[in-house]
Length: 151
Image 1 (tube, helix red, strand yellow):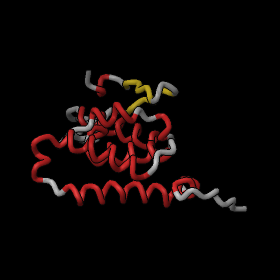
Image 2 (cartoon, one colour; image 1 turned 180 degrees about the vertical axis):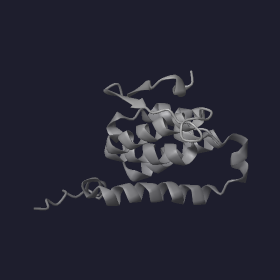
Image 3 (cartoon, helix red, strand yellow; image 1 turned 30 degrees about the horizontal axis):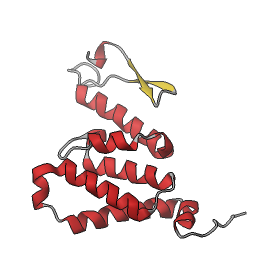
Image 4 (cartoon, rainbow, N blue to C red; image 1 turned 30 degrees about the vertical axis):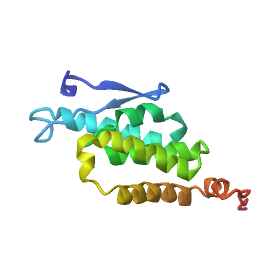
């Protein structure tokens, strides 16, 4: 159903419902852009998951990851969301990198034969380090230290 015929409700994480506005060409007088409507909702889901990575079903997201997919199933988006969720749940960075790298190889399929897997591993580790820099209490746990309390 095209969202230009009405606003479709979108359940997010089973906790709240947000209505996605319809998108139309030419200021509302043209054809419906069904893909943009879905893309907008996916972006909203991503922002909520970035705020609450504990809500993310990591196993399902890794299983749904696909090479050349868009939105939530794309490799980069899935890697970013899943690394954040796993680190937030207390997994060690080496386990996170290994798990996501294995899932990425599976998602790449035959196209993975042409990938530089050392570079891919560095990129995944970089995502992890970026998340840990933004969340110092998680970084301290990774280092085996008690997080410092900032007053």
